[in-house]
Image 1: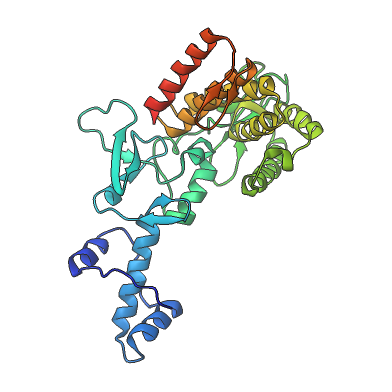
Image 2 (image 1 turned 180 degrees about the vertical axis):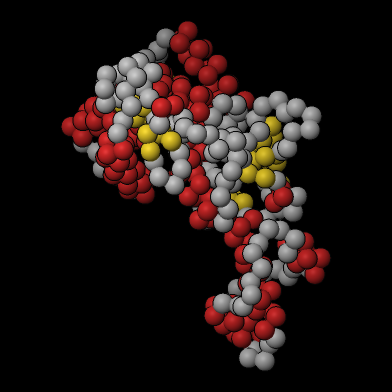
Length: 334
């Protein structure tokens, strides 16, 4: 291998070791193998322990830098910013510089926070967010958004009146509670009914995760019949305030847009935008992309041809001006 790595100064190494990481007691076989390969069999075991620590620092404190090729980076001060599932700041890159921006007005004395998760994940349930953070960052999130008794993005369709919604108490196990009863009819699910709903929810989540992994157009894994049946089934199982119904709607936006049905795609896009604004208020790239999609679909619906960087056609100019205002709001959010 002819690859070369830039050297790290002792000061940089000491700064990296200041980041959060578990202190290893014994080096892993992989770390020992790397040390023996580069420094020989007589290298001190402490070197393998230090390598183990530096690898943990990298895995637990890096920021995503690029998608193609996949790249990550670390920054000293930003690495000490705490996570919150409703952060008051967002970050992006300007070249290789880390830029921090406020998502809303921040009172004097309030802690600066960012999200360690992708913005799409912040729309998900407490259980899903906590699971991702435990797997990637090795901590259980206890922010104010995760400490609530009822998960606001996990609403099920009421089994009683079929119009309202019911919620279950958050915890190691999902269980019905009076606080989550239907506000329309007062229906309170039994434990057996709650378990059945959660089983159906898990099946939908598994299906959505499978779709998320697929590449290319949604038309490649959805048919017109499936798309129509999906919305009906989702509305019977979930209320409008369920993150999986929102995630399915995003796939339906992609499907109907690819199928040339801008009107139906726009109806789902509007719903997704409203869900994002309610669940994750404030400036966000996610909301910016939602508004951009709405603008594109409105133009297509009115006879314009929308390309990646251009809009052409002889449609309603007044509408075009209104959509330009949406694009400007989208750009401001970014």
